[in-house]
Every structure is written in C-alpha cells, then in structure tokens.
Image (cartoon, rainbow, N blue to C red; front, side):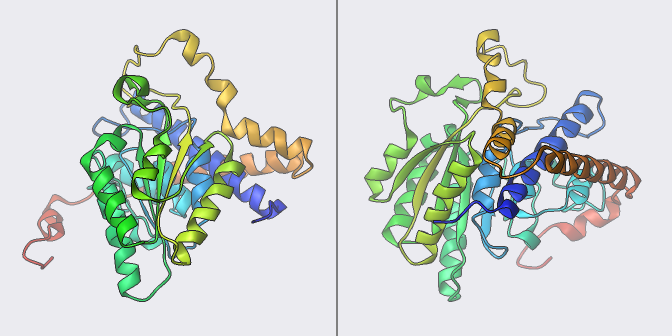
Length: 325
C-alpha cells in the first residue's frame, strides 16, 4: 500500500491546481473567441481523477484519453505551454496546431491521443497493452472514458478482449453523471458502472472521484495488478463536471439547486483541508504552489501567443497515406 508522503501530496495538489488553472484560462479564451473552433470540453471539477490515476503510473506507461482530455495529458506530464499553443492552433503545439482541443496528444509522455469518437479509446488501450506484452515490457495502458461511453459496443469489446487475454489495462470510467445532457439514470438501469466488470470476471471498483487520495490508492492497486500479470480492472470514479458538456453548452438540463452543490465536491478544496488538518502540508506551502502554477500558466499563454502560425503548405506532408508520411 503506497504511503502519502509530503512529496506525493504536494505533487497531487500541484497537478490538480495546474489542470484547474489551465482550463479556467481556456474557458476565458473560449468566451472571448481567443481559441479557434468550438466544442471545447473542460474537466473543471474532475481534476482528482486524472491526478490520482496518473500519479500511479510510470513515465513509460500509456494513457488513452477522451474529448475531455486536457487534464489527462497534464497529469501524465505534458507541457502546458505546448498544450496552450495547440489549442490556439500554433505550430509549436503538440500536433503542430492541427489537432486542437479534441485531438491533442503527446506520445512523448505516453499520451496516445484525445479522441472525438465516444468510446474509441476502449479498443485502443487494449491494443497498446497487447503491444507492450509482445515487446516484452511491463508497461500498463490506462483508458479514460465517460459514463455514456460505457453503453457503446466498444466498451464490451474492449473489456472482453482485455479480460480474455489478461492484458495490462486499467479502464477508468469518469462518471460525472451525465452523457452530454442525459442523466445516468435515464440511460442506464444500473447505479454503479463498476458492476459491469463482473460479466468479464475482472475486479470492478467504485471510488469517490472527488477524493484524489482514494483515487490514487485504487489506481495504484489496479496498475500493480495489471503490471504483474493479473489482468485488467474496471475503476469507476464518481465525479462532478462544473461546466456544460462543452463551453457553448447552455447547461439548462441541470437545475440551479444541483449546480449549487458543485463547490461541496471541489477536489482541490478537499485536499487543502486534509493537508492542513492532517499536517501533510502547510498553508504557506500550498500558497507557494498556487503562485508557481499561476506563473506557469501565464508563461504558457505568452508562449502560445508568441508562437508562429502553421503554414498551410506543410499540411500535405502531415497526412499519412499508404504507410508513408
């Protein structure tokens, strides 16, 4: 069982605060038209899940993300300046400005891609895990997906294959209670998605996704189980999405009373309280981290703003066809 050292707690806190700071800036940019395109999906309120899960991984492990993937990539170690450049469509971005928010990726840190197709990652992650096994490594692949994606055929295909071949995969369902605007109770007859693990004879665990420590402990167990040959695990983290499904979403399907409960679910405030109450960190130390993160986000914005625009003449060379680039 991993221990919560001061170094680990600080790392978890910094990761969550970085995700929050990055996405609040992106939200501001989206409102003022300072990022191209639309469909910016943010994970404000859900920061404990990527922070807790990715802290249990090694640098050479893999993650497969969703259309709401900024937090996953930051937690896996991606640079916020190159991410911001990508969202602003600049050449210095991770996808040279061609991927944007929904397709941002960084293979350098093991991020195999955000994806605009609901549930697509559920069959990509087992492939990455199979690759690791065939190459003789002990790398693990984590697949993030939402509660809506758990109704897709890919959910059952991915879990079935991973269980049958005992692949080193951890399936992480970020259950924020809504598939776009549809509440979970309206599209599923079960309360806990982790119950579906039983059909594939793999462990199914539900944790409080607001509590980064609880997420980290469960993820550490599942990752170690996968790495040692025990096979896949389905980990469900109940969480809360504070913004609409995307930034232009009116979010009128959730009542004012429901939205008023969001601050009580704040994973960052929860960890702050525990740090102080349990002596894991000091108020001054947490303030210093917040200041460092705010400076980092400011530098990331400046980097993105000053980066070059991509050249349309290069586009043809970025298309893969016939096995050649």
